[in-house]
Image (cartoon, rainbow, N blue to C red):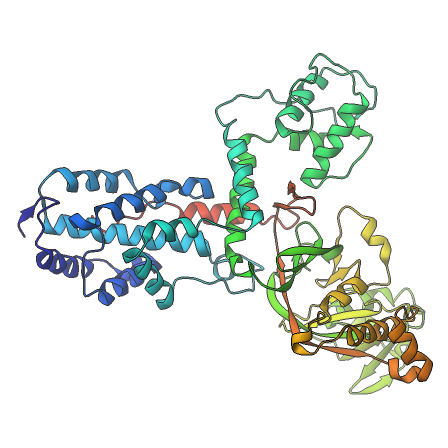
Length: 558
């Protein structure tokens, strides 16, 4: 095949070598191999990296590939020591056209892998993880064309621009960088307390200096705070509560082993948590710039509503309890709001819960205002043999009347999904006082349903003829329907003319509101702090294992 120096290349011979070398690569080696081949076909198998006038592009690419670790992605996955050695040889030695072709193809593969990973993520959750039901974007012909265009025009600016993420992503990268400073340090492990023992306020303990040192590192105590204190003073306890707030633990007036276990996390464990959530952030990068949307974080059991990427509403939520009733992670659009909804009881709840409860509590149906139907006709539940109900034998339909006692509360948010879940109000507000609010059958209970309803209404926009008066009347219709006082002068005027004008049971949303039900165990809270929450569905380890399986160097040629 002949040899050449990097500066004296017969490009036709190199192009021919690239064409032959591509045929040696199996498409099954990696999903992006197909797109590498498509890229070269679009360019008539021309070299992209290893000609003299393109040497700077090669160096630019390598420089960015080496920074993949800052995103929580192993740089060796994108640029191996072997490839870097081959690039150096190509600049200084005479190599065969076949060797140059392999370098060129491997660099294109690295370019596509890196861009795809940074923009879309490494893992396809809907295919590789349980409970994920939203489709994440991945490389396609448009994406490849975009990469080729920027590779030939201004690669440096393109590679720089793809690093720019939202505030949360940038904050997580900064958090990773902070913990990286301590990776080579050794921290004494805080000893655990005897079973059921806790440290109380003012209590003297040899553990206190260890706790103080760890709180300095996690940032809840200043670096000059005395480490000779041996009793649990108010400053330390306040710092502990700040730490607990940051990691999703309940505040208290003592310190137990669960708090100590979180304090004992190593820098590597903190970084791993950040890396996992950087990957989750990349899956939904397409939300950036959306005008209006709602994000549910199942792990943190909170909801946030965004307008122009600014959070304008935060609400506690209740989510599905584990393991049998997990809330599915999905993306949809809220198209309708139902006021004073009835509740059609899911068959699974009838089988697993109600059929067993009513065997001991015959007043259950009357007390909860639930009607029972069989083949479309209402039946007396007292005449049903509930001991014979099973998954295979459940012929009844149950409907709970609208009203104060209804399990859905006064407001339900409908969105298309095949799992029969929705966002809704609740008649039991006490659950929002709990730290662990994984208590539902899969639906999302919202602490602030009225505020969320108002958020979903079309915003005042004279360009599309949505007036402030129209919005005021819609708001008061909602309030009037759920027996709250009318507030605006427009609503009061309409109510004074005819109360029927304010009657409303359903609101169709135009435009619909984008909804993402997601799972984050490290994120930025409403105070712009990077915080962590407990992994209630044990999803972190699954994602970590999947990432480790995929983040290994892939050599196209042997």
